[in-house]
Length: 450
Ligand code: PHE
Image (tube, rainbow, N blue to C red):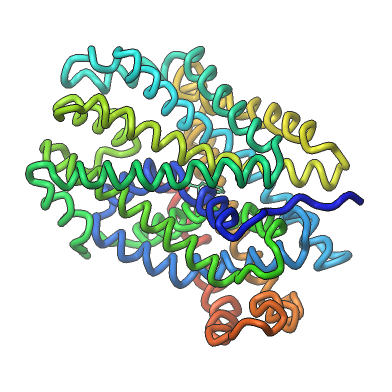
């Protein structure tokens, strides 16, 4: 067999993994979830989920991938021969289909907004009319599907380039750009009049808003945002070198991802409060509320362009990582050349994706368990497949892998100190499985009620 592709540098690994984690989840989903679930209180619970469950689960995915040296399915197959564990990898591929199909719809919207900002058509819209503009846009099947496909093609072009020459190269370029854009936007937002109100909303925990649902959403959001539970990080870790410190990388990626989510809040909430808009305006916060605000800001058009560029860049490095799960699986398990695997994967995902795109227009009356196609894909992936995958992954590492193998991955064969190893072991053996299982059961139950 020819040599497997791999990442070329530590910075490359970090950029790619952070690129996967940082995406629409941080900039589009996180602010509206925090807005709807009590701001600072949500943030606090979210932190607990990240530290207690996110970092240990991410470390566990890294352990499987680097030990297995294959795609998510193949890694399980190698580590647990003649068992049903590889099915977790198949579940990851299914989750990848579900996530990419709805994710690419929203990612496509960002392209429409970039073009409409540059072309000046967004600037012409009257104050207060953004809601109508957006409603018209998502009702237009041709435009939505077109942008979605453009986004899928961009994703596929990067993935087709390979791990080092595609994924790593673009992540190293795009991620620093994203941080820069975010910081510029954050400073701009803090300088707005009355921005302190927004910051207070974001950081001051008001526990009267907290309910069981808050915890469910925070966990689902933490998994989604860190790209956990579906083999993305198993796949990426199979391209890590043997010197990479897995636990430290997991910690760094989680810190970077959380920082971006907070920064996104710092960009959005001061603006929202400064212009007297309710923070809880749901998924449309970014596509209706923000453009209304940009309209009233000096040089708003410029900042609007920067913002949607930021969103598109963030989304792109994430869609790349989701597609890679499927491509690595197709190419290694079915012996396809990478390019062919990429286009087959992208094309087949686009078929499901188009259904998600149309669920705002022509297919808006099609409902599955009371949700439209877009929402059911999101729900199935974020609230069912990711927590279930995450649960099985920690159980696998904690209870089925040989403890000496796990330890040797974490310590790089004894080269690294393992002060936190006993805590990690305890968490993945007991705390994480119980917590995730409880939340999963509630999530399906409450989710299907709500
Ligand atoms: N973490 C990405 C985000 O926050 C989404 C994602 C989920 C990517 C699962 C890969 C796997 O936008």
